[in-house]
Image (cartoon, rainbow, N blue to C red; front, top):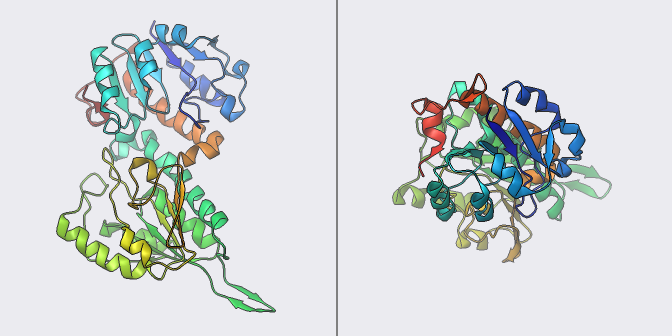
Length: 357
């Protein structure tokens, strides 16, 4: 009988777990042996005993059993060394950020399924970990901005006069962006949003925000955005620069799956912004939408705070882990049949999320 192993995440600052005690019954329904690393649920306040399965304290010993490995963060080099040859790994992988990791996995003939590359099709909706985690990113990014800024978000009428609402621009109207719009609106801000996909206009407006049309349309058949041409980027930046100059807060969430985040906000744009404005770049770990952003750092540039958000989802690890675990379980149902590993390489979902090693 194949064994599925679930190690504790070792990436700095990562509190999520790839499985929660609440969902262990569904995992057991796959009829696999299950072994987890001691401390797996420490970041979500779940004791080892709550998982009701075999607990292994030594990471090397755990990986030795792993026919299937499920993780949250991409495996580090020391983890790949410990993996069984021919194992199946299901995790966020971001192979373009660490090609050496991909090569190491290739030498061990590992089948790698990247959760961030699950295609946006109807039958894969319950596997879409990018969307589930992006919901948290959009929510938290606005709270980070509200906490960092030195002004109110809502309009307030006081004995000292009326305070105007903050102007918030959300760049990228995917799941994270739409959630950011909703939260910023609830906080009372005047919200506008921009996306290169014209079909997002209705979604943006349905949330009470104004859609910023820069005259560039770059949607693709997969529901994501394609990369812009040089001419399109120039037009985008020209219109955006004028709008950015009037904004108090910018929440940047634009990404292209499988690639680094597009550079949308230039240094010149930041220089033209209001003193005291705040940019929260939720894509900083993917290279950033703002060319000045640095993951995990807050930079003050021409009196504009640029917050390079890092691993936002881990700050809400309890809900993030539950959502992610559900996504992983649905992927496992696709690759495990009758207690055996049965990966259909011709399946549309597998073909899209399998990293070619």
